Length: 69
Image 1 (cartoon, rainbow, N blue to C red):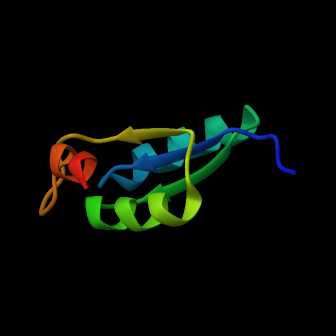
Image 2 (cartoon, rainbow, N blue to C red):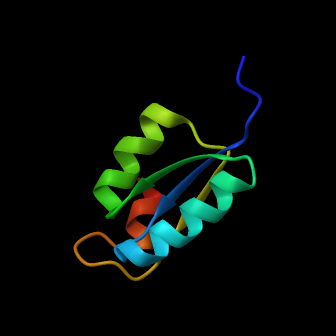
């Protein structure tokens, strides 16, 4: 059984995803990323994260709409 806490990062800025993913992975977390709200919903349904860090201002589906889904 994997005891690492799982974190999903959702942001449309690749640099932010890379920075956060790198640091959280090095801190021992199991990290997945998505570059938009739609992708974030899909990953969340498969990954079952313990925590989601979600950008509120994304094109097409913003963070609020993503959170509602």
